[in-house]
Length: 105
Length: 187
Image (tube, chains in turn yellow, purple):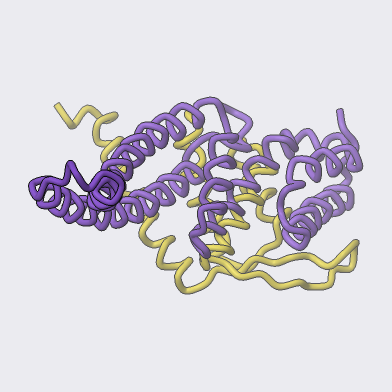
């Protein structure tokens, strides 16, 4: 799978997961890497960009094990962006599935 | 195989040009990642290999920072830092970003040279007249007034075009950071 495609999908996965609940980096990566092969470190540049663009905010929360964890929370703008990406995703996969099923000819 | 200390020191080296607080914040994120992984029963070596190359991550984190900085404050310095950070992401980026930028920058430069040299013709004719009053020609004055006017107009246009191009290049940088390889292990 080419990198551009994977990067776009990773963006979508992160937003989808954060929409379900606030999560810290490690937790988020474990949820994704259980299903999709990825370079785990790449999630942080993505999260930092989301925070700079206002799609996510962060807060620290104490944990019983080790240092406080930085949690990421989806903002309203982040949710709006997620909806846009989801719509693109559905349209794209629908089109591809249609072609795979041979209905395009 | 790298342990936590080696990974973090390589990463720190790769983001050395970023401001202190940004750097500390980034290192905190990866330290947190290590401590969560260790609590999960992994070894430092396993964690660092699953994170990917610290050099490549550092490049991507720098690009994220500088492309955001040029949006916050579009100074020329920030523009070139963002440009540098984006072309450092990969050889492919060097081609698709530096190529068009150099081509367009030379066109802009040519436009500015025309604008400035046209604008200065009136001054040139006046100086010439002061030094050699005997070869004064009214025709030269009229032509140079016309050229100066045209030069100033071209200058105003070039100013607008330059700002506009800068804006679109920043958008293009953003697109590159979003879509082009950097930090991803599997091509």
